[in-house]
Length: 334
Image 1 (cartoon, rainbow, N blue to C red):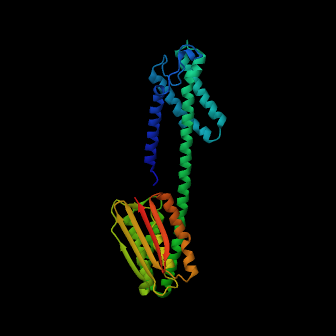
Image 2 (image 1 turned 90 degrees about the vertical axis):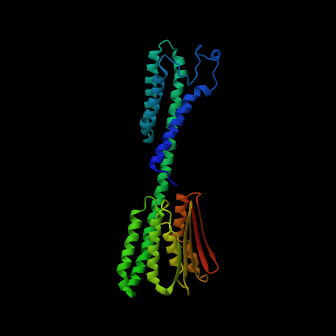
Image 3 (image 1 turned 180 degrees about the vertical axis):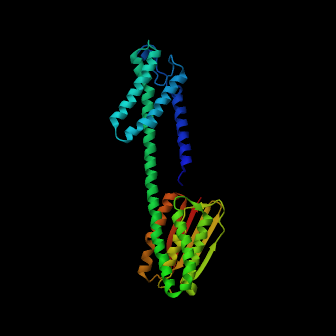
């Protein structure tokens, strides 16, 4: 399931805290160099040794200031492909900070200053730039997935409405007195599709509209089709992607009523703690090639892809034919 903006910000904050803990721990974790092997005199050029004439919290403050200047400000130059300005901005900032440190420690050898004091800033430059690049890649991937999800959701609307309007059209010819109550139920379904597409909804809301859709179909077919439904009362804390169950029932009515002598559809929804089990079974004409081949159309492909995006590793989806029955079984782990 996708993280909310608040959770993503919390996760990013934890990453930053862990980063600074590791950064401050490096002097103790890395092996101490031997002073007599150092080319710049007796002071060991330990890359993360903060011992200077400046207080440690001042040095750390300058390092953190540089890190977040690069992380929050200079990185925009990199994103806009202004690479020369990006490198120059970082170099100028490093030089200014090193100059401040040199003023407070004028007796320090310039070679020592560059070798030892430059190391933390190079590390911070690489770390900050890498973190932002990883963050940008994750954001881009999420946007691609969200765009695909929006496309899949929008695909449902015309596909679903087309079938419903066909139903209303049939009422206009044979049962005009049913048009008004049918349009009322249809308007509720359309409102549900239009205004509940960007976030999950309570399962009870999906169930309510699922029942309305079943009632519409019962009105349409009257006694010409047997509809058996068992839908358990959903728990109040259960949420689900909108328009995930209704298209599966629509698929059964679309393919389970044509060229069949005694059409029959069974619908069951069982909610247990942690899981949703949904099953739709309908008779189908196994001798009709057209009837069997269209089961893999846009509706089921759409649902399968949405499940892959929204519930990766947390669902099972089976669609198969067994003699004269076609089964769709969906289980979602919450």
